[in-house]
Structure formats: C-alpha cells, structure tokens
Amino acid sequence: MKYILCYISFAFILSCNSNSNTNAQQKDISEKKVYDMYEASEMAILMNEFYAINENIKNDILAGNMPEEFPSDFLKIHTAELSDFKKRTAKFDAFSKLYIDAEQEVFNTESVFPVKERFNNAVGVCISCHQTECTGPIPRIKKLLIK
Image 1 (cartoon, rainbow, N blue to C red):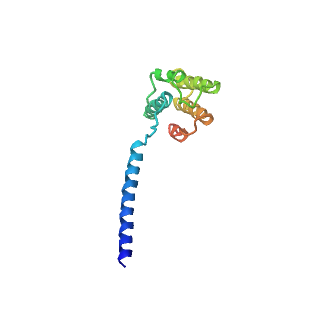
Image 2: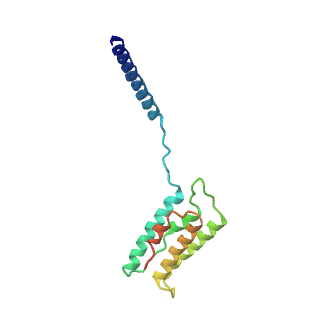
C-alpha cells in the first residue's frame, strides 16, 4: 500500500510539472503570434468616401434640394491604388469613366431627366461595376437607390 501511495504521489508531481511546462510553452507561443491586420487600400477608402458623399446627395435630393457642386474627389477613382491582389483592367477603366459621367450628370442643372433618375443611374453604374469584380458591397450600395 505504501508503494502505491508513493507511486500516485510521484505521478501527481510529474503531472503538475508537465502542466506548468505546458503553460509556459503556451505563453511563449502566444507571445510570438503576430497578427496580420487588414489595411484598407486607397481605393477601398475612396469607395467608402464615395458612399458617404452619395448618401449626402441622396438626402439632399429627398429633401427637395438640387445637388450643387460635383465633388472632385470622384476623379480620384482613376489614380487610387487598388488592393494588392487587384489590377486595373480595361473593364475597370471603362466603368470608372461611366461612373464619373453618371455622377457629373447628377449635377447637370440643364438635364431633362429628373434628378432622382440621374442619381439612381449613377448608383446603378456602381452596382454594375461591382457585379463584375468586388461583389461584397452590392447590398450596401443598393441602399443608396431612391425608391
């Protein structure tokens, strides 16, 4: 019986030591972890700015106010850096030009089309472009449409 008690005590001591070693090893591993944080590209930041600008334009239109001045920030679409895994393509360049034209038309005071229609057309160009490349923001973009 004495030997069994000694054996159990010895096993208990070994298990405690191995747990403390395991905890120390886990602590060392967790201290060495380096997390790769997402950093938005210049284009992603610009797209968020476009959304905010268009949200303000939508609110102005709904309040009965005519948008007054075309935001020059829209023109940065041609030069903003894309995410590392994206490349500028002819399709992207074509949609960028269409988008600028559609946005400029929203501010055209001489247009025969209602401003709501012109605004929805500009938002539609956004949606069309995103259907070919980056589909994630489409539900958010659709919220800009004036019904």
